[in-house]
Length: 329
Image (cartoon, rainbow, N blue to C red; front, side, top):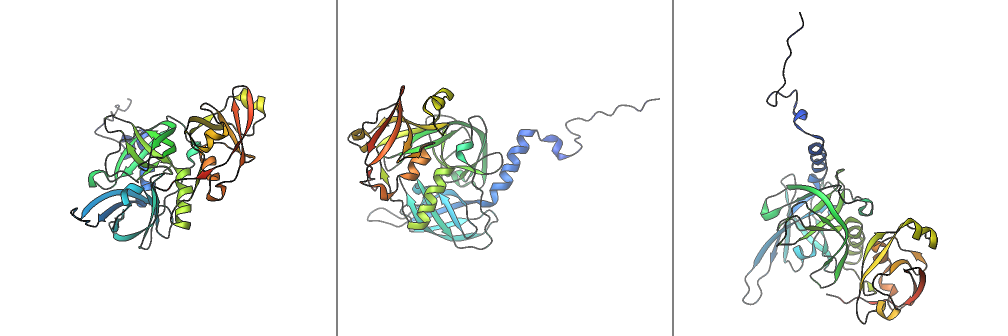
């Protein structure tokens, strides 16, 4: 006589893993990898005149074993005191290393041992639709997790300084006040962005500064305490190139910078750059995306004329551009 069948219901799982679908497991693993690196940042702003002492908070994450951490410039700029809460419950003082209002990024250094650094991912390798997980401290609720997808890439976002932050990631992972400066991570728990802004009147439209930009800015802030740069006066975004365009012009890259707008009176306008041009080269070097261009616009480029290679319709043009010094905020 065959043995009676035994039904397994939702209230009788063989083990806890049976309750988790594949999506939940991915998000859970990503969170477990990043949480030890996430910090809550508390700031104090000294009283000035009739303005009383103010307090604020935000998020950040450790990215080196010796205590360097990334956050947003608007979280810590002008603070008279910075302290952090670590994931293991410890509190520590932190010092501002440098900040850059143009990209809304800042580096602080934490005075504490046994810190766990996060791992950066390659933001140029991510694609719309892939899982994105945000960790932060909205409204003071520490280590809050929200998940969604990468909604779009290559967005431009106005910084508080007035300059456009280029190559911004759009996500629908919910962000709220206090999430600023926290990490946006991939399904592998690697940092692909630094959460920075939301659109208050919208739902599910949030933004993060790409990790490749964050790494570049962080290195300069650690070295110099600020970012000195030249600029050309164009807003651009990284776009894929059609295969026929790559073959026709014999290009060595599969992406380029699309000129979204050109500032009046800027070096770009004086050089003859037009909206809609594709920038594929700068000073004889290939340009794969906006990060490549920003990396090359260093202080030593100010006043130095260089060739700018663009695709305009069916033509390949070489313009002569002289970067100017970027205004400080």
